[in-house]
Length: 427
Image 1 (cartoon, rainbow, N blue to C red):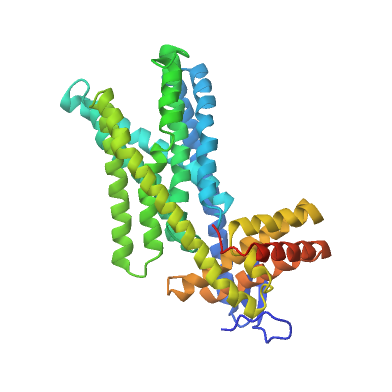
Image 2: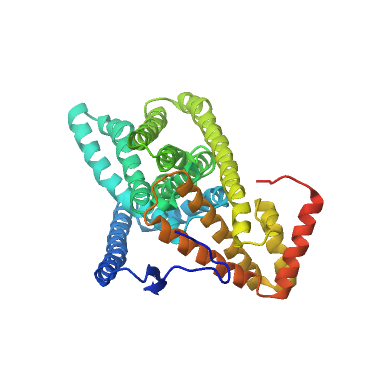
């Protein structure tokens, strides 16, 4: 199917139905089925939100009953502090092809309410069973070293795998998997920290570095805020590998290996804290966790470079098709160039024009990844229609971005400045 959108080009008989481009030759019964499917799609989020809301209220009630109302409030305020920096780190990772904000919000809410509720129910049951079988103290060990890693990692992974299965087009590789799993884990850690901080405040007040809420905050909020995101990142890496493979056995193996690694890492961490002393915990932190964290960071940076190369490889073809201007290829080839372009537009034409340029840049990236997936033979449902829609979005975004003469002038000046630097594409 042709995707030529240049003036005068022969166009396919598309028309818009319910916000979706539909071939005029599509039978009416298919359109009716599409409407019914859309109603189901709209219904499910409502059901899920209601369930998550009930779960959140239940968690709040349990926490209040366990530690008291005031400690819960203090714990919640302190639990918010690590969320901002850790979330900002994951959004920085996701700069080349930002995921939909609604999906990221859903990931956080699932981690904070859904996954935490599932884990609370099963871990408490495991603790009771452990106490009855192993005696006093046995329940804590079973819950921390066996139940928590298995259940918590599975509960967090449910959202990521669900997005992968239902909206596979949103996954372009390992970076996306790490971002979704990380944001889910941030939500989970937020709720978990409320309980830990609240309990520490109830038992020891504010305290100092040796006890009370200050000591717990230093440990969980400053030294190990990336613990849960690091565990879950193993699942994200597995999902990212699965998204980039055409072989079913590779996808299945990647998902299973990612989950097993997350469970093992979580179990080692909890085991060091529960069974070992302070020295064992410190050794585990520096010998196991820090190297794995560094290795994961290196992997993320490498994958970000891969994302850049994917976009850069598509840009000349976009220019040949007339979807972007040839002079914009350089401006779209690196994050610093894109930022400089938006800055130049903001200075000359205002913030609204800069936002339009941002939307245009995002549309270019989305189409680049989509065409890359199709070229690689990866599964893309309704690939022809998605490409047609993506091209239409890009052209509409570009028309909005360059409609002002000042914007076109700023783009020209930015392109000239980039060429004068003579630099290769940067991250």
